[in-house]
Length: 536
Image 1 (cartoon, rainbow, N blue to C red):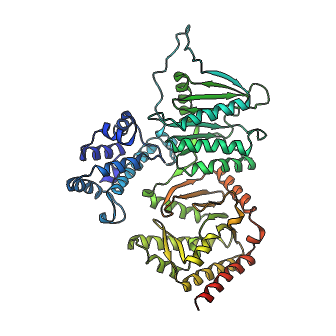
Image 2 (cartoon, rainbow, N blue to C red; image 1 turned 30 degrees about the horizontal axis):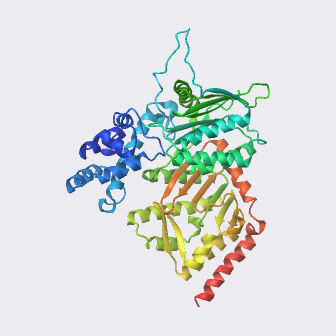
Image 3 (tube, one colour; image 1 turned 90 degrees about the vertical axis):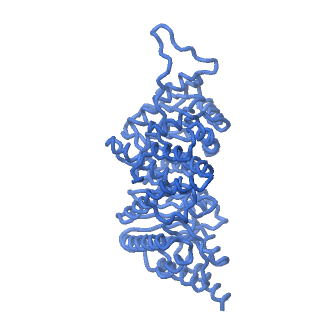
C-alpha cells in the first residue's frame, strides 16, 4: 500500500509515470539538478515548512496533459487512504497529498532508525551534507584569505556586518542550500539593541525569507522572563512564515562561553567573541572566503545534529488527524489555558446551533461528523478544566462587528474555517450563550481588543493556544482565512513559560474596562438589543 512508500520512491514513481526527467523538474521548480537527484535517491529530504512540495505538485499537475496521465496518477492516489472522494480533489491536491504522505513516512523511518531523536518534529535530515572538499593545510602552508576577510571590532560594526550578510541574501540565492544560520547564546546589550535595531534586523530576515531563504536559529534557553518575552516578540513574525526552524541547546548549561555566529550559505560568515572579562561580544571574524564559510557551516551542522533539540513541529494539512489528536490530548491535561483568537472559540457555540451551521457548509458528511466530534471534545475538556483552572481569552472586536452588521461567522471545522451566514435569531442565541459562559464560570476571563487600541499583538490571522507548562499551538491563516497557512506546535517548558508571560504582558495592555466581565456582558447585551430592535 502507498502509505508505506518513501518520498524518494514516490517522486521517482511520479516522474516515471509522467515521463519527466529529474533535470526537467529541477529547472521547473528552480533548484539545482543535484538536489532533485538526492531526493529521488533517498539521500536528502525537503526541509519541513519549505515550499518545495507545493512547487513540485503545481508543476507535475501541469504535465498531466491527457486522460491517460490523469488515470495513472489516480491509480497511484487510490492506494492512499485519504478523506474525501477523488472527484472532490484536483490533480494538484492529489499529487500534493501523495508527496506529503510519503515525506512524512520517510521522516518517521529516519527517526525510528535513530532513537536519540525520537521527537518527530526534529528534521535534522534536512541539513545539507558536510562539505568534504575543503582544502586542508600541509602544516606549512595555509589557505590564503581574500581581501574581503576582516577582523572587526565594536558591536556597531558587528551589527552592520550581520545586516550586510542578510541583505545580500535578500537579493541573491545560493542554490541548492538557501540557509541562514543564526545563534543566540548571550544576553543582548539592550542599550545598543534598541527596538528599532531589532525590528530592522527582523524585517531584513523577513525579506531574505521572501527571497527563498530558510532560517536555522540556534538558541540557549534560560528562565529570564524579560529575555523570553523579547525573544518571542522577535521570533513570532518570522515563525509565521513557516520558513524558520529553531533549535535549542540540549544541555541548558552548555556553551556558557559567549560566542555568536551568523552564516549565510555561499555568501559569508561572521563568528563573534568577547575580548575581555565582561563576556560582551565586541569582536568578530568576518569571512567571505568559500573554504572558511564551508568550515563554519560544517561546524554548525555538527552542533545542530549532536547538541540540540528542535523547538518547533510543523503540521501540514495532511497531518490533520495527528494535529487534532495532539491538541485534544493537551487540552485534557491539568493547567491554566490562554487563547489569542480573532473569533470567539468553538466551544462557545451551542451544540445544536453548531451542528445546524455545519450543515450549511460544503463539507462532506464525514468531515462534518469529525468536526462535531471535535467540538464535543473541546466543550467537554473546557467544562472539566474550568472547574479547577483559569481560562483567559483575547478576542478582536471585529468578530462581533461582522456578526452584527454582516451576519457572518468564521466557523471552526476539522478541515479549516468555513464562512457561514446566521439568521438574527441564531446570532442572539450565540451571543446569549457567550454571556452565559462569562457569568457562569468564575475562572473564565475575556479581554476584547478594539481597533483603536492598536496593540502590538493585534492580528486577524493568528490563533494562539497555550496550555500552561504543557504546549503552545499556533495557527497562521493566509488571505483566504480558511485553511491555516502555517500550523505549528512547541512543547519545551521554557518556551511554553515564555509564551504564558508574553500573553500576560499583552493582557495587561488591554484597557481594564475591556477586561471587566460586567462591561463585556453589557456590551454583548447591547448587541442583542440592537438585533432585536432591527428585526422586530
